[in-house]
Image 1 (tube, rainbow, N blue to C red):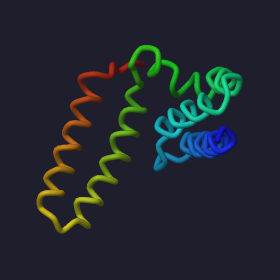
Image 2 (image 1 turned 60 degrees about the vertical axis):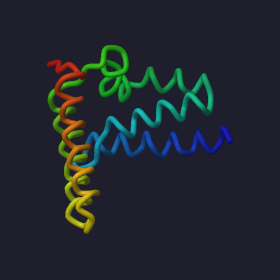
Image 3 (image 1 turned 45 degrees about the vertical axis):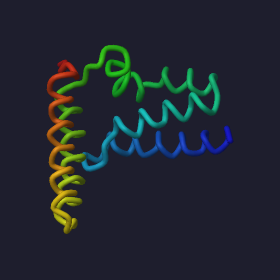
Length: 119
């Protein structure tokens, strides 16, 4: 099972690295997932991952202090909002559309109130 976690962690970290270059692909969620998967695969690999520049630049402040740069917040919120809006558009159920809108509002509330913005 550890090898599967390792493979998934490598894929997730690669997607996170690509997300640094492509504004459409979010970096932070993939790197968070990679950190969790590396931790499940091996303590040594997890220690290596948290010391990489990629982790230090994009995740360290969030993991330690629950803070993000404004650019990171905007990227995450815009990508997630686009995905939720697409789901709302393609859904015929009014109840599901209302649920997704509420989810989007909760997401914005959480990012604005509970995650500090740093420079």
